[in-house]
Length: 371
Image (cartoon, rainbow, N blue to C red; front, side):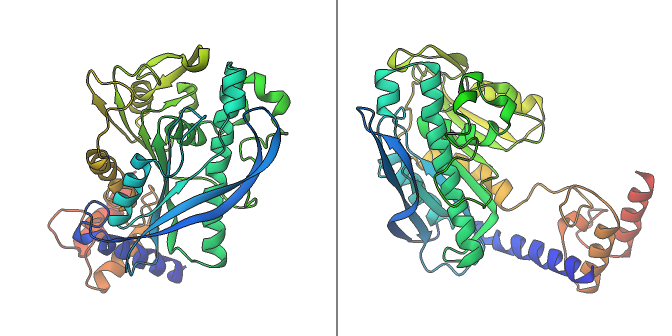
């Protein structure tokens, strides 16, 4: 027990030190890029409908000469209506470069496209199948890094700080990978094919590892149904033009390819998150359409400021020294260790006098007894 508490204390102090010097919100590094790393493969269809195995690749952006060993990991997925685009899209390259400059390991993935499904048979079922392919590929990429972290630790990532996002179709994939996470949320018209296409996880590779992530960067995306978002769900930062006629800003129809499919856009997602008291932020580009973005500098600044609260865990509860959202005897022991080691932690400063001492222990114990 003492070893666990000591390790927890060390990790929290390390995290606070790590986030000094504006790391994760200021561009401090040059960037190394590793191109064309294969992370999986899966069956896809050509534009004419013939099946083939497609190898899946990613580009990995890392901060050059960085000495940290537990870095946050973020994925960005390109837009293109699930029929075009690539990981080399300028907006994705800019986002990955900017985030790696701030100390993240940033990853641009290619995912399977669905020209045959959407161009020759544009209906709601085809649209969901196209989105599920991208979702499955994203989850395989996440599993790849968690597998590597366990076996090799090539990328020096922290598997407890993984984030995903993208633009347009890429944002839709990331959002629905997060919130479409229960069998009973799957649209009924997918039930017959559910096992064949791999359920919620898919068959794109690296099975047996966890595919969860901890935050979303949404540029002009949408969720299939606002009710999929529940209390304490994954935080999301959204940026969207309120006149978007491709992916709706509110609750409207996607009409590409002749589809008439109702989805809930960024405004509805944000309102739902607020309703549930979940962590969320929204920037609205007023009187702007689907792509109001320029060089991704403002988008990087806005989204990274939101993620900073997650990455650095700066949203603390007074008295919750181990940051498990429960105040109990473990926090008292940590506070005593903090005092004995002559260190300071803001969450242990119960009387806000910028010191931690026996008075703070007494206040903490009283708050536990009175709860």
